[in-house]
Length: 152
Image (cartoon, rainbow, N blue to C red):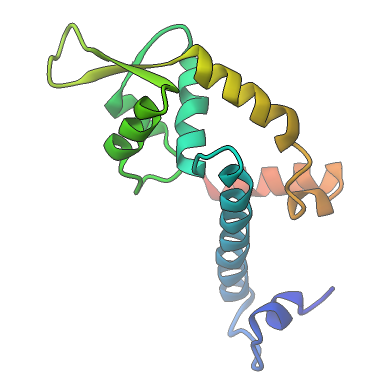
């Protein structure tokens, strides 16, 4: 198992430090996960970013949330939230309403169709991530603890 990263990225010389190796490893795993998620969500005709927004809205349901609050909660902070919301609205997965306090902002809520889609995705999504499921439950717990430490 040692040097798996080096084999995957075809690196011939050793990393200059374990920190550099960890950084490169996280970038590589992130890319693999992103590719895996893109392939998975394609069958539902949505992107991972759209899925993220739908999950945010489901967490607020039945209340609406404004665009700025969605932006703050997005996993991918570089996402073009307005464009993503327009696509979700066109697919009738969300509803955009006028914000009563700020006419320039919109209140966004998930539709029944959006909730139904999340239910379909959720019923098959767990267990499809073969990278995470290579780890046993104790290893996943350790990984989550390490992620929490990195985010402090």
